[in-house]
Length: 136
Image (cartoon, rainbow, N blue to C red; front, side, top):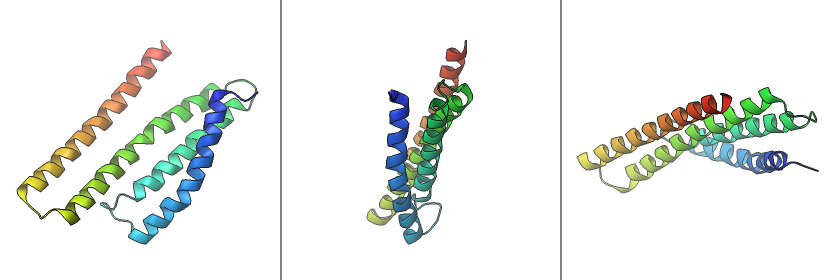
C-alpha cells in the first residue's frame, strides 16, 4: 500500500516534470532578465522536483528516513519564495506595459515589493518556529 505522502510526492513529480519544460521554453523565449518573472518559475519547478524526490527517497526504505524527510520539507517551503518573486515580477511587468508611468505607479510597485518581502520573512519565521516547536 502506498502512503499518502508517497502518493503526493509521485503526483508532484509528474506535475512539475511536465511544467519544467514549459517554463524553460517560456524563459528562453522571453529572455532571462530580473523583471521577466519566468526564471523564478523554473527555479520553483526544480525545487519542487527535488523536494518530491527526497520525499520519495525518505519513504522507500521501508521506514521513514528522517534526514530526507526534513530536507524534503525545507525544499518544499523554500520553493515558495521563487513563486512569490515570480508573481511580483509578473505584476510589475504587466503594470509597466499597461499603465502610464506616474509617481503613484512607482509608489504602488514599491509597496507591493515591501509586502512581498514581509510575506517571505513571515513565512521563514513561521517555518522556523514550527520546526523548533515540533522538535521539542
